[in-house]
Image (cartoon, rainbow, N blue to C red; front, side, top):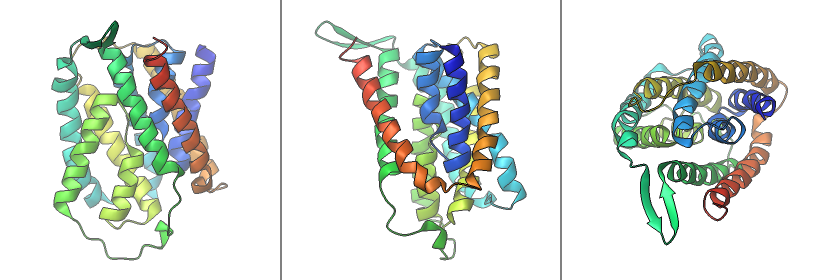
Length: 265
């Protein structure tokens, strides 16, 4: 299972490099089901793995001038604060036994996995749906709807903190629609935001998670190899064409996790 896990870790990076999002959607299930990591710990591990991989991937975008620093700060600041506070205070405050329905006990781990699965289903919709117009053709001058961007950044930060997902599928459309960024610039800026908030969220961990640094380093290394493969493939393959296929896979995974964590328990 570990060998399969490391192969899946490469796919985490490939997804980030090829379509700019989706990597974190794979990370938690890979850690939980292939490496037998506890769900709560997996959300923390995911923050580091996705953050580190996104940081490496963003270097190439910086070199090409495809990172909008102002947007990264405006959107990223509330997101970073929200993810830090969520990991430091909200996640540790969730009881190990949340509630029960009849004989079925909803534990903290089950709650985290179900929340993550719901996020996967939501993410799959944004990947599967067809864009009505090509975002690359957006030539409108950049303007900021500050209240909406700050709110969106905070919401993405809370989601990231709770389930360990970078939220690229939320960030990229927000940058294109709210900040009027071209798609490639939105992807590069998204990677910077994901890297900053994920790593800060990881190091803001409340202290209840024991970190297996060897496993974390190995998965991060394989994911980093994957992002270079993804960036290379993005020059040969249109990531937009693969996005719906990946979306259907994410949808099936989300449904499977919900069934596994509830009906099959």
